[in-house]
Length: 480
Image (tube, rainbow, N blue to C red; front, side, top):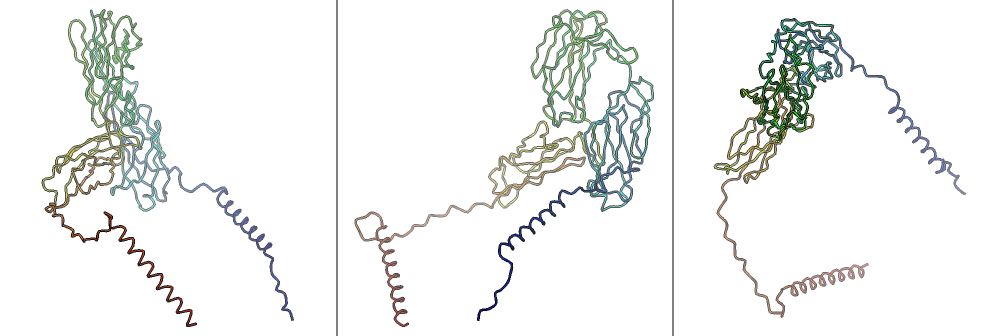
């Protein structure tokens, strides 16, 4: 009697069901991934954060730096990603493009981004793990107004908390155009040649008011700069603002009146016929920063007017930056420390060469990489722009068996240190005497090599093993 047939789902139907299920799961996953999502609850402007804004200086001259100071308190319920903002007045321009507000333990509580006049702060995860967060910050700015000397300028700061007002007394004196004058400034105040060095400093030399029988301007470049000959212009005017002494209506001088000799180290502009009555001749040009680790860039030009040689002196300084505890375009301190370790370190003099590279936003700082050569343990101190990240490698180890380099560092107001440690083993033992290996006499086989004997021995061994194995197999078969 046949067993009853078993009923079940044919394989083809099972396959079809699996395909349908797979499609359904895929559709559900796609809907979850691509479905419209509600905007997150954070990333919203928070009112009432800034509690005060003022300028540190009571008075200033035009085109000078003033420090903006502010205080803030973070309201309860503030989330990471929330923001607050501070809008600078028309008279102030930030010298930085971004900075951090840091807590006492060094944690970043908010990051600031500067776009035009608006400083936008974005809170970090710090606010979700701390309560009653408050503090203060600062931003160095460039002051300039249309007000004359003796006038008080009212400046207004706009924030999410409302408006804050302060005042600056303009103390600028009238420029006396009966004397030679020289001035300079950053063409990009937010970078100051740190990552964009080409033509970073703009200079102007102005002669005294004419007439003069001749005029010759000579200007050698100082360390940290290179002359950009293609930017040199010769201008002149007879119009001077009587209230400030500022030159007005500058126009290009006819090239037939002057000759120029220029290279990266120096330029000479010669006007053999001098200047007309009341005329002020102006030389404008730019220089490139070749090393961004200088705190200041001085320049001294000489003007020969046929009657006397007059020096015109000006200095462009690196500005301070911004932050809660400090970050920006001012200078911080980096110490490069060479340490020696191990039993064999005594008396090691290298030389040891350490190469340091610093960058800002992944762009190498002007003047880096730099190399430092040590002839033993010691340290070098290097000025580095605030906010830069620095790391080191050793290119000449002095025979060390191991070199350890500490982690990269971010340059802040407190000194930063990179330590490079070279390890040396103990004094080497006397060179061992090479042992004499005894030789075994081999029978003369007519060959200069023992290879045939070894090969024969190997073949014999293999044949013996094969015979033994065959014999065991035959015995097993006979006993069955």
